[in-house]
Length: 353
Image (cartoon, rainbow, N blue to C red):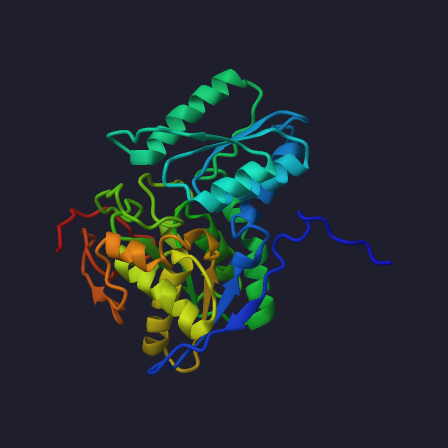
C-alpha cells in the first residue's frame, strides 16, 4: 500500500486551469487554483516558515507560535503549528469573518481580537502592538513575521516550478499583493527561466503598498495593506492595478458566474485584470494568474445582496477597463500604472477623484 500524505504534505498540490474569459479576449489565460490548498494559498507560507524555524532551532519543540493575521495565513499557521504540537496564538481584529474565526477555534488556536485601531497604521499597527505584549508573556515564542520573513517569497518557488512545468513559457504573471510574498516570490523564480516575463500586481484602492493614502475603512480583505511590507519587491513589478470595493466584489461575482469558481475578492480582482489583459496582449501570449482565496468566508459580504445594499454598492457595476495614470497618485476607481524596472522612486502623489 502506498504511504498516504498527511495534511501538511497536501499543501501545494493545486491544479492549473484554462480560463474561458470573454468577448474580445485574444491571449490565453490560466489560473493556478491556490485556493484549493487545505485552507488557502498562504498554507505554503506557513509551512515554509514553520518548518524552516524548526530546522534552525528558532522554533523549539513545544514553544508557542504567535502571529498577526485576519485571514488565511492564520489558518495555515494554526493548522501546521498545532499539528506539530505547538500552541498557536493568533492576533486579529474585528474585521475577521465568522467562518475563519470558527475554523481557527476548531483547529485549536487561541484567538486575540484587538478592540481599537491605531491612528497611524490602522488595524495592522494595533495588532502588532498587541502581539508585542504576547512576546513579553511568552519569551520563547516564535513569531513568523510574515511581512519580512524571507521564507514567505521563497515558499512560492515551488509554485513557479509548477507553472513552468505546466505551461513552459509564461509571458505575464498576475497576482494580488498584501505581504508581497506570493507575487514577488513567484515572479523572482519565474524570471530565471522567463526573462521577458511581465509582472502585474493587483492592489486595492485605499491601500498604502504602492504609495496611496491609507483608507482603513476599505471593505476588501486578503489584499492591500495599511503598512508597506519589506517583502514587496518593486524591482520585479512592471505594472500595478487598483480596484475599488465595488469593482473587486462585482468581478468576484462575475468569476463565479462566468468561470464557475467560487472565490474571494483577491481572486476576483486578479480575474478582472487578467481578463482585461487578455484583450490587450498578443494572441500568442501566455498569461498566468494566481487565485489565492475561496469564497466561503465571504458569503455574508461579497455574495450577499443585503451587504451590497447596506454599503451602497451597485451589484451591476462591472467596470470593463481601467484608466491608465502617468504617475503614482490616489485613485478612486480601477486604474493602472507602469513602473520602470530598477528605477522606482516615490513620486509626489496627486489626488484623483
